[in-house]
Length: 388
Length: 95
Image (cartoon, rainbow over all chains, first blue to last red; front, side, top):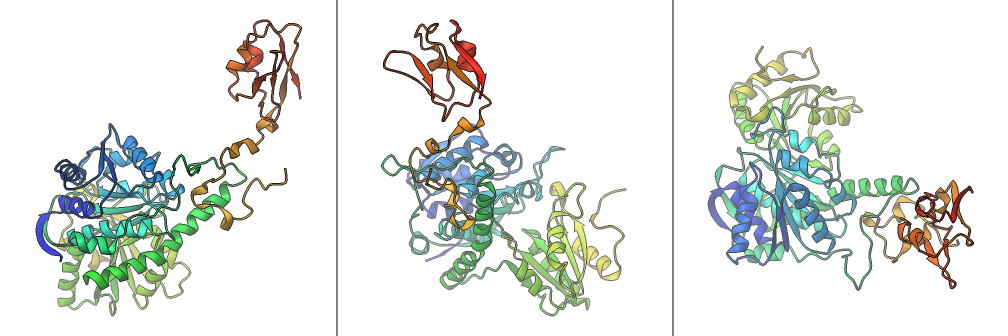
């Protein structure tokens, strides 16, 4: 039976991953995800988990080792943040192209420079288009739930893709929260051992990571893109199963008081819970305010977004990364792209907040809300609270 | 070659472009990339095998008499054998 625990979220994520019985973990420490692989190393060293823990010399090696182990049929986990992700960047698109279900926790952190160890989503935005299923947790409970769900989704015979579980650096990784931790029996029941589609073995010859010349590259890319798009079906199934078993509901876009709202904010990650408080206060002031919390970023839930925005007059997309020189910030650019064909689309404004760990407070959301509800902005996007 | 080299459609692509037939690269004839081919003059060849050792494609083999030839199905015409052959038994000629 699940147990109520009070624990730092990074360590709880490690405990949740350990319950999934990974065969191989290869990781290199980098703030702020460090406590995840560090605590897993403790669990393995203490003999609680039968797992090959590879202490590699870099993130490039970490993901390379995970790729090889996954190709050999192992259940594999790694974790990183920011510069570590950039250091392993070369391998990141190779994992989905080989259809290997490597599971990775990304403790979201700003990328350099200027050098900064605190939270924003700029590290994830560097890899969003590389073929990984990507989820954003907004609290500790979602983090541990998504870690366990990720294995089931990624390893599913109809999916075979890597999964990124994003948790905001410090705001989540270093915060102690009360969570329900499933027990081993429950996780074993939910998550059967991995049955790989193919595994490299001397007796069963298979070539993986093959050359794709111009004659086949188009078809290979299309096949991978379709696999990622189609993974949503399995994601929804697994979330339904999770809800049945553990009573906690997951949807690609979670709606908070948005059903009858005129003005809606859309956030990702830990901002969602802060924004909920702002929505409550705005409702008390008489605004018909609502919140959409984007949990699934890849594959992008376009249909769910259109449905959620029916009847909404103003949409405020809150981003936590700059798409330098781009048309908007990353989430908003995508939201606008989805809504372009919808004749009843809301007026969409875009504010970037919380870069490099700057505090995101309830008052900030209320200010952004009131500004957007009042008038159309002059610019496509604004960095909220920037001095000058 | 009667066997199809590539899957016709994206639906026929194996997941992850995996290949289950061993040594399938043999069916990819890189000789088609060649502009020049090596031609051996066995009157100058001393059977040292330097060309065989240096060939990056490993397409040079020794025959029964101890002379060497390049398999033109795979030879890309890089000319390394020609460059390394110090008795000058190899010439590169337009293909």
